[in-house]
Length: 136
Image (tube, rainbow, N blue to C red; front, side, top):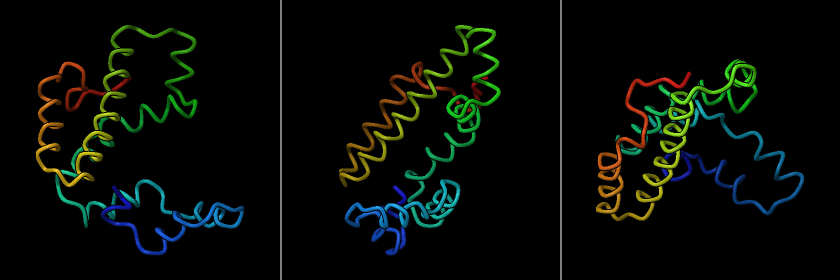
């Protein structure tokens, strides 16, 4: 979505260059996620940025802790995973996949398809994390 709505021409050149050691090093200097989101907030339509902001607000830090071996991963490894936490983590994962579906539908340019994706969130709301729910 960042590439589609907000990436500067220099970033596009880095990402579309022929793969080499030099081009890989240049591509490593792309903005971090927070900066990409900031660019999107200024340039992307509301329906493209809202799911990202919601995911970031409610799920980003706990999931990052799991992925990067933080407190959540270490604590749960030693104590086990209660069913509620496993369900929350699965719903957060479904949310990430939902974001991919939204973005993919937006990129098709078929507005009806995007509406259908959003409709599926309502239809299968029990499979997604409720707003404000935090993965522990």
